[in-house]
Image (cartoon, rainbow, N blue to C red):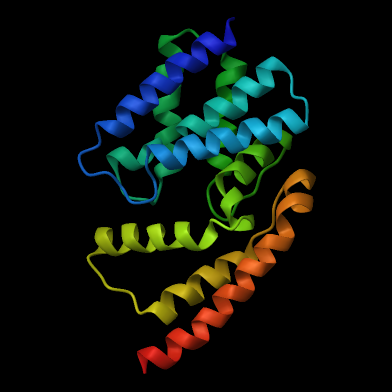
Length: 204
């Protein structure tokens, strides 16, 4: 099997699906998906994965949020897995590979509970920004997307509190990301907590 050729087809398919989505989402869009794929490739390179295992994590990264194009956030991982299965069957991809990719996609469901290295890599690739200086900007995009979907304006303090709770409960799954990203994640949490105090006073 020519893994790169199939990955090229996957990239074209997912890009077309996300580009054709009627109303681009502020966060869960093609740019996010490409970032996750890039993160997954970086982590996979660190662990020197075999070609089949690289294929699994990159395929899962491409499809992990594709379920947003045909439904609400709840259950989007399962829908993305179904879309992948149909696509993979059309390309006659081996059943074991399909099962591993689907396992990686489903592992990104919050709270993340990966059961092996490949699932852990995809989980960390998805939430990689928790431990980078890009967190605050991406959190604002999530706020924009959620506010638009629910047609609700969230008080700043309330949203920031939810984001802080998410960061506190999160733990990177791979030792690579734990070593590389945990310090910045703690900095991000401290910045959130400082902003929460300012926002609480402003909301009063």
